[in-house]
Amino acid sequence: MKQGMPVIYSSVACNLDADMLAACLPLLEESRIDALEWSFDALYREKEVPGWFRDLLTAFGNEHRLIGHGIFFSLFSGRWLEGQQEWLQQLRRVCRDFTFSHITEHFGFMTGKDFHHGAPLGIPYTPTTLKIGRDRLKRIYDACRCPVGLENLAFSASIEEVKRHGVFLEQLLEPVNGFIILDLHNLYCQLHNFGMAFDELIALYPLHRVREIHISGGSWDDSLADPGRTVRRDTHDHAVPSEVFRLLENALGRCPHIKYVVLEQLGVGLQTAAARKTFYDDFLQMQEIVKGNCRPQTTADLVNTFLPGSILLPETRVEDETLYQQQLELSRILETAATHDEAIGALQRSSLAHSSWQIESWEPYMVETAIKIAQKWKLSSANA
Amino acid sequence: MKLSKALLGAVMIGIAVHAASSC
Image (cartoon, rainbow over all chains, first blue to last red; front, side, top):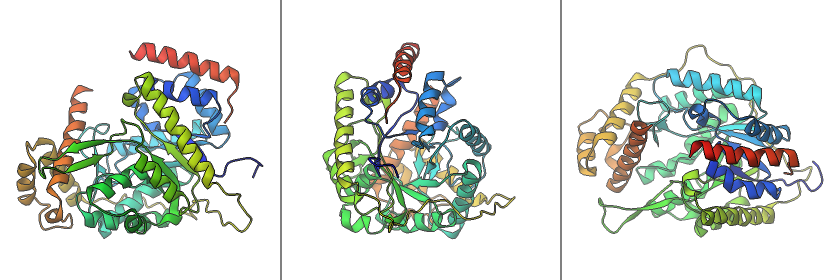
């Protein structure tokens, strides 16, 4: 390891978005950004990647400081989708063009019929979904041939789901020796929405698998289902709250294999000079916390490369048509319900009732939030 | 990470052009 080289890279999520890039520019000019995270599958909107952006990605990739973050793969779709096949082909192509240090995706399945317009929702934790998830992770690794990781989910409908998430992630990632992106704003959503303590929740995560941490902002929703309650949502459109910086200070020392800490904010939240200045300040605050937690690496440190041993890729893809039909049914209910009461009634009459989905334990205020998320994405699909 | 001045210049121009064409 080179002298003076940081053990943990202070990074930004950077896509081909004018506002996001404009916010990153002062940090690039001051050589503050250690690594870039690029959502390579967001390129479907672009006819071609401009040469200067390719050169920027190449410069970071050549220094092993480029990481790829997928959005649309829909890891737990019960049926293998044509869009997933195309996604893997695109991943192969970008991995030929750029050098990625690792590739990540989101936990969950995507609502909606349009591959590029959906919201990530949770799934029941069963042997079937475990098999599907493991199969998909192997296929992602087969396409990228570098470490593969998953981000913890922001949205959960029940506290039981929140408590089981970490263990399920460990079971899922173990066969590919995969890693976790610990998204601290997602964690903040869970802590607030289910009234949990940080120490209680973080103890349920396999922190030895955390290679990357995300910090970002979000927004508050007033609940009609539970008047007086606010729901925290992972909308990425505001500055990082002080609580999330505190979570970062508390989490870093518990993650022995942490290598990247990434600041995320959508371009829609970076359209003014004031918002860009706040983004700059947020990065500096993040960098200061990261530097305070960097420790010299010693030969005694066992570094997990997060590369698997040999992977046997089955010819037949794991699928479950019952699960797929339930996912379609859930998506339809959430996308069309006018109220949370209507959605809960429809769920109780659906094939998800009295099943491994455990809809009976879903909090009404989170069903209400799920409706908002699903309908927001459906609307964006209609306007696209 | 330190970028070359040539790349930084190209990125600055690229962002301006991209912003103009996406506005």
